[in-house]
Structures are given as structure tokens and as C-alpha cells.
Image (tube, rainbow, N blue to C red; front, side, top):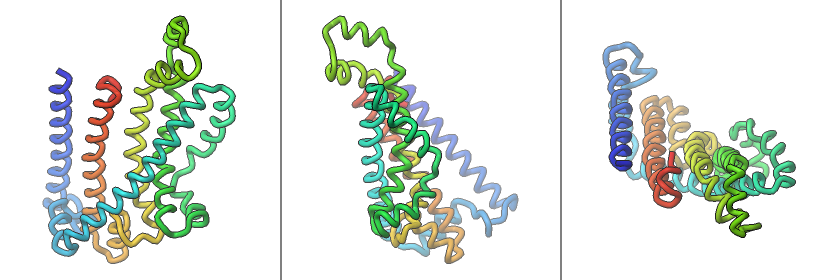
Length: 255
């Protein structure tokens, strides 16, 4: 039953996305929006494939995905550990929570100058900006999950002799997994969201670079194609992340 509902949701999502593209296409074709400013999706896709070699597009996608995977993986590792520790150890939480709340509202774009100073113009600075996009929703969700555990569940486990690390890893962490799973999904989406900003840092490859380079050349169609490409890649990869969460953490934990 769950699998059937999931496929129905996926089908509805595809229909909704397709309807959006149809409306966009019609609006451009019928003159409701200027095709020079906002070209139809088919025009943007066909025009880009004619001007940009397919191997170059695949290279941009591969480079961006590699950067996102590195930044996201670091964000998951750091966010999970700090969030769980902050929610479980009160003294540690008192120290870290104000710092996280101070830094969390700062957009990753604002960190680009510091990233360049700290890491130079190479890959580490780009990965760092993507890391920031993933880290804060994950650490916040992990902390929320740990502090929202039902005390009765912990007391019941203690009556069965679980204490210390056993109580933490066998009871508390699994109970916090629904919130952590939500943070992971949000963090993955935000990693794509800061991709263009990250690839402002002296990049010569990547989907964000393709968009910015097209802006300089006045290629509106390529810009639109790049935006669609980022959205499609996020949609596809998010589906697979959701499948992994359902398989590893539990179907009822996935969002």
C-alpha cells in the first residue's frame, strides 16, 4: 500500500511539473511574455543543445554534482554530530546553540569573501560554501529531534538497564531520525540552491558557471536551460535520497 501511494505521489508530481512547463511554453509562444527575456523551455533546451556540446554539458553536471556531494557529505557529518551532541549533552548545547543561531541566518553568499581568504580560489572554497548550505538545516533538525524525544521512552529504556552511550545510540538517536531525515532532505536541496553562488569563485566548470558565463555572453536561452538543469538534477537526486532514507532509516521516517 505504501509503495502504491508513493508511486501515485510521484505521478502527481510529474503531472504538476509537466503542467507548469506547458503553461510556460504557451505563455511564451502566445506572446504573454517576451521570448527574448523569458524564452520557452523548448526553445531554451534546443538552442542550448545546438550551441553547447553535449559532452560539455555533462562535464558541467558532473563537476557540480561532485562539489555538492563533497559539501553535503561534510555538512551531514558535522551537522549530525554537533546536533545530536548539542541535544543530548546540555552543557555542550548551551555552548553551541547560541553560536549556531548567530551564524544560521547569514546567507552562504556572504561567506564567499572569507572562503576565498581561507581556502583560496580552488575547490575547497566552493565546497565550503556548499557545506554551509547543508550544515545549518541538518544541525538544527538533529538538535530538534534530540530535544523532542518523549521522556517516557527514555525512562522506559533506563528501566531496562540502558545507560550512557547505549541509551544514546540504541534509543535516542533512532528516535531522532525522523527530524534528522527531514534536515538531510532540506540540506540536499539547499546545496543545489547555493551552487551558483559557490561557482562564482573562479570556476571554469559547473552548472552555475554555465549560467554565469551565459549571462556575460547574453545567452538567455542557456541561462534558462541551466536553471532547468539544476532543478531537474535536484529533483532526480532528491528522489534517490528519499529512497535511501526509506530503506535505511525506515519508511515512516522518510519525508
